Length: 640
Image 1: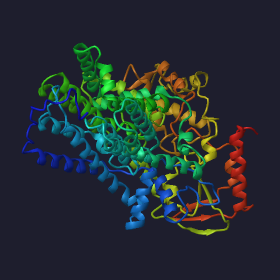
Image 2: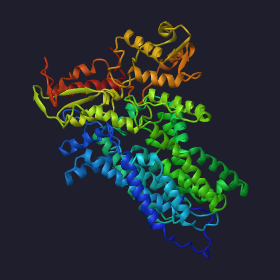
Image 3: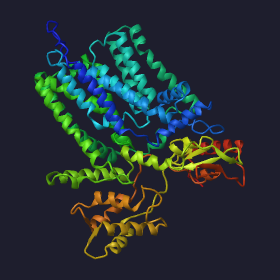
Image 4: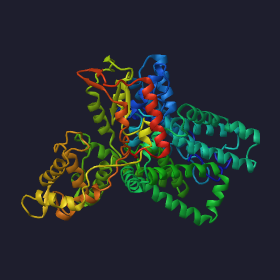
């Protein structure tokens, strides 16, 4: 994205740097820092890594539960964990205090990478574009909410994006025939792979391109070997993972990936495109491809042969996004797995527009993209004061002409929220605040009658961090080897149409064939009561009546904004049957949790372990783990 073809004419001097280049760069960096500060948050999942770091800091290694439990890799950011561990060990700053500070610095590194690439953009004749265009591209990136949002969160996202964005940008550099170029490219791929398993894709692409270029004599065998040397760190890490955890991939992969879920992923992608103006990028790309093909029909073949690293980088970006869309189904967090696309799409738009004509075309394309991505800020402003369940419909806030589009968007967002996908960062901050209330500080056990105190939890981040002396069983399997390999079974009530029909008819108090919000609320309460649940939803915001009414109305009420027809209401059965929930589909196999005998209770800022009728000894823990892991290998976890 920083290069173009053909090469610049040696007689064409590069434009002199604009006198206002540095002031604008300073504004971009300061603006990025201030903007990210306003969006700063921590999420419960970040505290999962914090617990691993705490155990390592205390001398137990990067483990979830200390011995006698076997090591499980329930975090995905190895190099991020090392950074947090170093900050604690060297400077005495615990992860909750250091994570966002380091992440913000890494966000500014991303700004620097984008700035360097934007100021190297070239026109069709190879001449460097004026600084004004590059700086405009930088400001469009810095003004994007998702780009700034993932400077924080406590997760490894910012560190991963440094490697990912840097790797793609470096692929477009001109001086790629040297061993030094390949070494830098390999280092960026290695950094990404050591931060998230997604980076293994970049490692494979880097190695494949290097081998291809060696066959074409782009560099010598010695130069290729030297350039690929940084990838040995990834090989070493994968080997260490296999030896230490007994697996080739993190445990989270097995816990989260149940079955391909394109129905979810395409919705996740569609709302991302709308909020970020990515449809403009797609339009520019189509025009660029048509124009280039018209100029030279062999264009794509020529580019593939002459700019192999760039082609590989584009293919890796597309494959990575496609995997999350078609296989994973998106992500539990709002646009986290697409966050690296924000700077890359802006740079790509500028580079493609520069091939189409004058700098004016580039500026128009960038301004349109900046305007398109402002939808994300509008959504943020309209949903900032969101309810506890985390869903807010926005259609009624739009002008009448745009309300049909707004209702379509609300339906997609409601569907995703119902399936635990794309939860807003503001909502995650609210969830963490709720989880943190019982834990004003990290708690040491007041008393423990057994050698192995155990607590079972479905959301384990804050609990795991706050109870360092307790073995925490992750009921959804992110940090539990057995649960992560348990086939999905059971589920909620079978709310089919035959079950729902009398409920809906009974809730239609005025018998007009329409259900308003109060009547739907009564129907939800009736279903809850029939299942022995609290109709008010005291079990949490995911199952509360207000949550169900909000998302079901957004999904089903298509003829009127204030009521749904009987048929629309009965269609809720189609949503409920077989409903999935991202990262929350695994559950302990019957009998497994009972054998570990959870016995820890906490209240009033203290925690204690209740005595067990039969003590859970170290030897017993080892027997239980060996037994249930063998059942997982035999495929008999659900066999009575």
